[in-house]
Image (tube, rainbow, N blue to C red; front, side):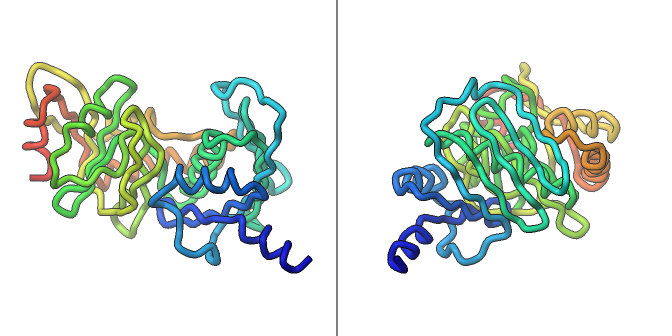
Amino acid sequence: MPELAIAVEGLSLVIEIGGMPVRVHTTDSNFLSMLQDRYAGFVAASSERAEIAFDVDLTSTRFADPNAAVRVTQGLGRWTLERGDFRAEWEPASRTGRIQQTANPYSIDAVLRIVHTLVLARQGGFLLHSASAIRNGKAFLFAGVSGAGKTTISRLAPPDATLLTDEISYVRKNGGGYTAFGTPFTGELAKLGENVSAPIATLYLLAQGPENRIEPVVPAEAARSLLANVLFFAEDEELVQSTFHSAFEFVSRVPVSRLTFVPDARVWELIGS
């Protein structure tokens, strides 16, 4: 029996994104292998240290549409996270939770995104619909609605730029500034970002046009555009207010510009050079 207990205990890994390690435990070795492949580069060398721990209950029951709306609610000190393809609970006080899903990588990916948004909201940070990259030691974010050019700007990045993500940027407040971290949350490129970080130099609001140009954006417009691209799921008034405050504080500390660009590599001559 002790040997069995050790074997079951061993079916865990820690996924560390944005400096926050999350332990995931399963009793299915195939599912564990799938997670190791899915989050390659973001799996910690040791599973000893974790800020949050989830037990994953795999079910053969088919869930409903994974594109269904997300519902995130709080009651009695516990968050409940639901979508058509999973149901999860998380208790911040004990830092533990449970996820029920089928054996796929997409459900747990959504749970991780949601939990990170909940933690970041109380710390002045957020997840942002934007590509991001490091060049010359500084991070640059490229935000925009679908079709604005996040994938294109990522694909055009020069060899001396390190891609953090082509889809969802991780922004953490750091003293008087902000740091961007690489994420495994991918877009059309289907390429995991590098697990590195750098201070954020500029947020660019993307637009495609007939020429490459950069124009400053006034704070009020910058804040509106930022909020339009922040990932937020919780039905919680306090966290909503915190997110609004975080957006306005971010644009007061980080330059925001509109980057209109022609889809060729020359646009990077304007960025971080």
